[in-house]
Length: 429
Ligand code: UD1
Ligand code: MG
Image (cartoon, rainbow, N blue to C red; front, side):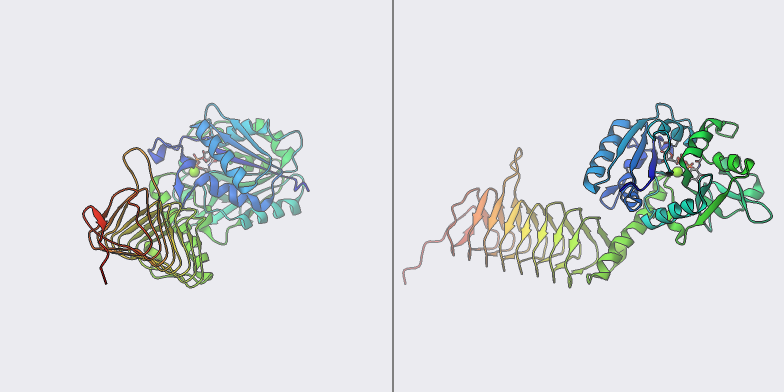
């Protein structure tokens, strides 16, 4: 069913203040781009159309938008190119062609505000629907330090009568702590009618979308604000310092969800867990862990301290990995352990196997990556090097410092020692 909401995401800006070759909205936080986070929140308003305005790094931004839309199941994606970035108002003018003749509600937001929550967008749309056909709703935030943001101007009765940008503000206006988040819900037809009225008489010589407020006030049409309960949601990222602050908040949200689901996080300040990681109940994350998107961790596991789990890692229930161990594209079976100074790459490890301190799965021959299969109840001695491809069947033991050359033809239950390792002769009795 149509929701009547068309969404416009502004993502054409160069992001000059990021001082980075990567287009601003593609900067990652917690395993997903800023744009991806904004698109996920947009899902909550169930938009009929999602128009993304691209410009700087257009091809890359378009590719990311298409990938995220497909993953999220976001329908009605349209991409418009803003060749020259003449301001947020200009960006929406460019988007207008993709909105059709009479969109009911147009929700505009920027691709550089990853903390925005879906519920806040829903509230904004609800407020616009209640107010009706000529209205405009602005999402605002009360900030202790409003520096850099547009300020909300109000008259003696408290009614909104404008938004002034940092660069255009008088010293008195700079003292205002209510800021513009850059998220607006417009009556669609009114927006389309007003866009051509925007001008460029401001410090930056740009078409400011914020001037829509002044136009509405001049016409005596209602402009209403919705104030964010959690001002953090309105954070716009313009430089790498702000990205780091916002990343920390996003990280806390991710960890908070895991903790609520029964995962113990000893030190939330040093647990780096991407979005899209599954962790079972009763698992503990010890300090200094880095866990990438898509990693799956079972119940009752222990991860860390000082552990990196890279993409493709699966830890089955009760597995333990810690103390300077790195895993990539590897399965650690139920109750198996790799607890000290090891590298597990392209390894499939069975149940109740112990990977001794300092073990290396040498998966890369300089050209190709190769797999290693390790069975159940295997005991790998400290400092073993297992050159892939290889297979260590159930019950195998390797001695400390063993070097297993590739495809060593190890049989079930054998013990291998030495450098390079060879089969021990069987005892006579
Ligand atoms: C904007 C608002 C400001 C608000 C702040 C919230 C205006 C004039 N100012 O300022 O009131 O407090 O956001 O974070 O709207 N973009 C384009 N095309 C352009 C220019 C910008 O697509 O020509 C996109 C950018 O990629 C970005 C977004 O619009 O995603 C906002 O632009 P940005 O330059 O970050 O605006 P701010 O200075 O943060
Ligand atoms: Mg911004």
